[in-house]
Image (cartoon, rainbow, N blue to C red; front, side):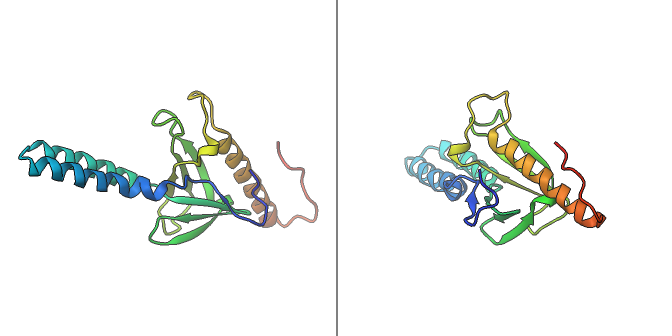
Length: 163
């Protein structure tokens, strides 16, 4: 993953918009068919797909652009510096390529955290190990926080970068 290149790198899956809307469309179609046939089971199906749709609305589109992340919740875009990320979590047990949650030190307009499904090229096959994307993001955040601290310290010399 190249974070310092000219072209932004998309980290989230390109299917994120479908993850947000497809369950709602499928639920309306299936429950409509069941209700037309006179089966009250259609209401339970509609409720199930409504819950799935609400759960999927938390996913954002995330793009790495140099030392910043561009995050879109499809209502607006925000730019978050990597140094503002306080914690990176990965939901390893939910799906083979589990959701990644970025926690921020303040509200950037999308809340104090953003959750996204990683692009398929970042899939991992071991549920016990951290994905390469999370490991690399953590290193980029660590580097950005170190650079921010060095600028804030305003030292006449540069300290060696921690490992």
